[in-house]
Length: 503
Ligand SMILES: C[S@@+](CC[C@H](N)C(=O)[O-])C[C@H]1O[C@@H](n2cnc3c(N)ncnc32)[C@H](O)[C@@H]1O
Image 1: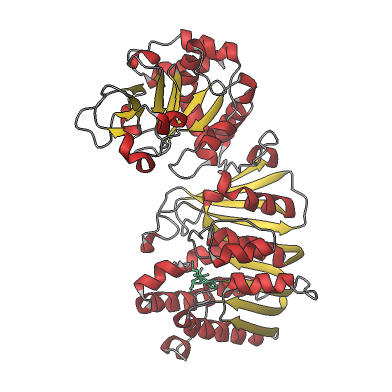
Image 2: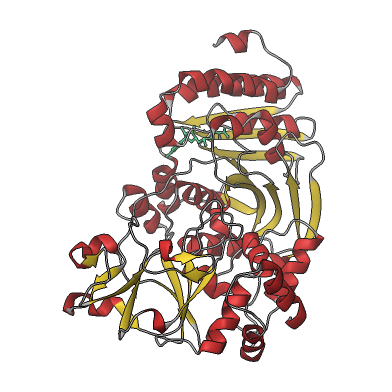
């Protein structure tokens, strides 16, 4: 038993927190990154535990990637005066963690039994993914957990890795450990069981998490979401810069009418802001990819109604958004620093400046041109008018989507290349009509679109799928927008005035 266990404080959260602080000093830094060992403070653990709704009766609790047991401890602390029994199962791979975990569980069982309740515990020092998949595939398996609490490891899993192979056996395709853990926990949960997890919010949008969102929204109701207003607030001492969310799900329950969204500056904030949002605003029916919009207040809901309620999809406008076709390192031999005979402009994010195209750029990091030959023919698009955005926004950029118009007069060429760190809007493969492109430029550079985009996208990456998911004004409205703007110099104020005037 560790020195903490001999000198037991009363509160289980405080006990686990002390173990966490000591365990942090014993972890191998390399292994720490590999196993995603960023542990929950007592304040974070309490936030998770407080989300559970049914605290009475028998609890069969799953804590996958349990660390020192902070989340289990917070759960036991939460239900200790209402529960009749707790059957706790913790999965933890690391032996350093398990040493502390056993102490935490001992303390939980003492507290629980002192209240006259029944306590049972199982610690499984195995890979949660492999273990769960085997369990789910066995003929005799029946879901047994009615509660799951998780702060899973966050790490990409490779398409050919053993985890992916195992997950496919249970028809689940996902590329991150966190979504794999939460997805499997959902599968292991009984009908009516509750799950609370803290994870990055990257699953809320984008194609990589389509399968996970489907599993989550088809098999559970999404009832509560907690967000932090600052990137560092959940794991500030660990320098984790991911934007995290905490959410509460109930298995096999139909979606409720509303989702409770709370937001706070940090986990210790005593007064989180509470806002109730209609479910169909959080997950819009018009979006087949079912992005999850996190709307935290009335102002944001207004934005969601205005931007999400616009009449057209990109398809309705005869427009498509695609990722640029040129992957520079795959065609190194055809890159040219300068625009020379036999080459055409190659547009990189560096050329997208102040919502316009600046080309060529001398002494730049990236080349300015691509040789036009047989091997590059399929990387080109017809020279003409297009709207381009960066896939990654720079820190100094005020908006996530920054659009620039590319026009054919840049060079006397038949075709042009767009790098794959850019997205481009086109008319189903052909250049855009000039007037429509101008309107699209105004719309995409508006504060309305930026605010709406931030509700579904917590990171700085803008994928073509995100652009396809936005709703757009009508063709006539877009053309009218283009006619009202002066393209000489970008003015945010003017763009926003036009949007207010026309939408
Ligand atoms: C993000 S930490 C969270 C720990 C704890 N739940 C908390 O909130 O403090 C994730 C934990 O999962 C463990 N882990 C990583 N991969 C695992 C796997 N495949 N199976 C079981 N545990 C794993 C790590 O050792 C680490 O302790």
